Each structure stands twice: as structure tokens, then as C-alpha cells.
Image 1 (tube, rainbow, N blue to C red):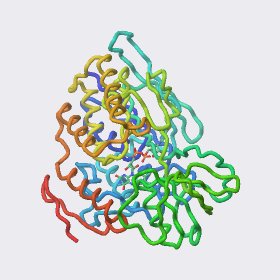
Image 2: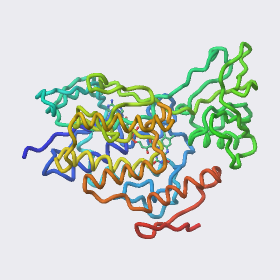
Image 3: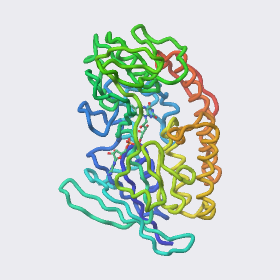
Image 4: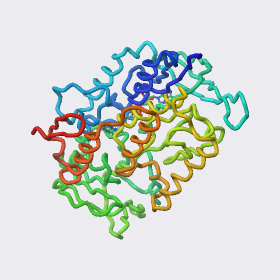
Length: 424
Ligand code: FAD
């Protein structure tokens, strides 16, 4: 059987995971070709103090998951480290992951993928497709090569999502998105309205309060009942900016502010893909339809790794990569194209009928991600994630809601596959 050529776009955690597992199957696959636009591996985890770069990591960020569940299941973090890590340690971990086996010879650094185009060879119901990948290197030299499949691992935390607020141009203070936030000190003594109370909104509010900023955490969730630091008050969402530049909130109240900080998430951006050509709608907050949240139903050799939100990222990437490779090597037999399409649409419709807003359709609910990973493992025949990943992940979620300021002080230890203990 001829070996398949696979292109991997991006050398962040998802792309490295794909490359590692392709390289371990050289009887079926040629060594991968990984395209990486920067000069290094690690993607998001490469902190850059300059703003406007790919990374959204801020200076004092610590992981919001303990290393015991954040790790790829086949590659632990250094056991000497604490459970919650500064971002530098995650980067080091990914560099180590990249050396064992050595993936670097397969990565083309400073190379931007500009276009990925399917070349349909047979127009039967089950098409045979190959892929033309056009990239350009640091010197601007453009190359087009053909692959049997493509793993899309270019991330989705670099294009800030900024909701429309009527009258925004009247706001006289500083406006920024968490993507451009690096550290708290410049905001000392300022009044800052932080819009959005998910992971970044909450963490940044706590950092800002720590340097004496007056923070208004403006969000549309039910009122947070856990203790917030002195200096952080909650409000309803900002709905408009008044003539005089004051912010108006949904409950009718108004306030002046020095800074408006959007912690409102990110848009999907795949400038190198043509959605309609692939039968996909690529919107800011949703890509659909995707069979098993992974592939366009009409093109089961194009895989999006790590699109879903509110997941345990590295273990999820691991399961998606192993499933995708099982599709490619034929050990998973897929239903017909029509059924793939139908299943993908039905899955989203069911969520929408349960009241999930369109922009949250790729957000996994608590139970959903475990069921999803379990199904991928069962269908493709690889070991499922150990139960301890879920139980510790859920424990940390609970702790985060009760002690958002100090849940990271705890350390954990795994005891086998199904138990953990807190060690301090
Ligand atoms: P990325 O890390 O973004 O990598 C994508 C790579 O693709 C980049 O290297 C980029 O240069 C490259 N690329 C993009 N476009 C192209 C192109 N056209 N051609 C070539 N290369 C391209 N996860 C956790 O598990 N724990 C945490 O505590 C945690 N905290 C987070 C905090 C913040 C603020 C953010 C933003 C994310 C956090 N995450 C966390 C999620 C994190 O993003 C994932 O863990 C993971 O690192 C994402 O990896 P990725 O490979 O999908 O994307």
C-alpha cells in the first residue's frame, strides 16, 4: 500500500500532536510536512511582550488546569513541577514533546500556508481527493505541493472577537481586547470595565485589582456568587456608549471608565480555506457542518484539530488526531457522505433546540467532551482517556468557581488511572 503524504498546518500543541502520531506510523504515512509561520514551536504558549502577535498569553498567566490533566496522555509534564504552571513551563513542555521523537526536521519554520485547495479526482458519491497546499517562505518564495490529507492546526486564539456596541466611537478612554493585554501595572489606579467573565475576564480582573485598579466585571451570566477581590464589582453587560462617553449597562445604570477591556473571546479565521468550496460555512464563532466536529462531510481527509471550546485541550487533540489517522488508514469505516452530512447537521440542530445560541454551538458542555472523546476512542479502537482526567478536571472546575483567586495554590497527584489526591 502506498504511504500517504500529510500536511500539518501549525506547530502549536495540536500540530505537534498530529506530527508525532503520523511519524509513529511510517508504514502507512510518509513523514509529515508541518508548516509553521513563526520561527518556533508552541503556538499560543510562546509569550511575546509585543502586542498584535499570534500569542494571547499574558506575562503572569498560570495554567487554569493542573498539569496532571492538561498533559497529552502519553507524555507527562516534569513530575517535580507544581500542578498549575507558569506559561513558560508549558512552552518548555511542548519543546520537549517536539524532541521525543524529534519533529523539528519535519517542520518548515517561517512558512505561511496561503491556500489549501481540494483536487477532486473522482466525482462519485465518495470522492477521491488530494490537496494542493500553497505556502510561502520567509523570502516570499511560493510553492504548491500535493498531499493526500491536511490537518488544520492553526489555532483560534489570535483574532479578537469584539461585539458591536452602539456609540462605541464616543468612548473617550482606552479600548483593548484581552489579546493585547500583557500585564496589570499600566492600569494601576484606573477604572477598568472588563467585558466578559469567562476564564480570561475573571483572571485579568483579579490581576487588575491586585495593582489597585477599580474593576467593573460586566457580564451576562447569572451573578457570580463566589468571593471576588476587593476592587472588583459586577455589573450587567455594557449595551451602549452615551453622547458624553459614559458607558450604559443593561440594567440602565451608567458609569465613566478609563479603560474598556473586551474579554469576549476570538473569531475563527482560516484565510487559506475557501468555505463554500469545502461545503462549509466559516463564521466568526461557528464552522459547520463538521462530521464528528472534525471534518467537512464531503472531504473526510481534511481534519480540524481542536476547534471545540471549553475542553481539556491536549487530551482532546490527542483523541482527535488518533481518530483522524484511523480514518486515513482505513481502520475506521465512515458512513456515506449523505449520512455524515446528516449526522453533522443533526448534532448542531439538537443543541440549538436545547436553547444553545449559535455562537456557542462549538462550546462543549461538561458531559459532552468526555462522551465525545470516549466515542472517538471506541470507534477508532485506541485506549480511552483514563477516568482520572475527567474527575480531576471536574474537581478543578468546582474549585475555580468557589476560589477563583487561589484554586491554583493546590497540588495534585494521580494514583493510577482512576484516582487522584490533593497533596497540599
Ligand atoms: P496554537 O497554539 O494557536 O498554534 C497554532 C500554530 O499555527 C501557531 O504556531 C501559528 O503560528 C501557526 N499558524 C497559524 N496560521 C498559520 C498558517 N496560515 N500557516 C502556517 N502556520 C500557521 N489550554 C490549556 O490546556 N490550559 C490552559 O491553562 C490554557 N490557558 C489558555 C489561556 C489563554 C489566554 C489562551 C488564549 C488559551 C489557553 N489555553 C489553555 C488553550 C490553548 O490555546 C491550547 O492549550 C493550545 O495551546 C492551542 O493549540 P493549537 O495548536 O490549537 O493552536
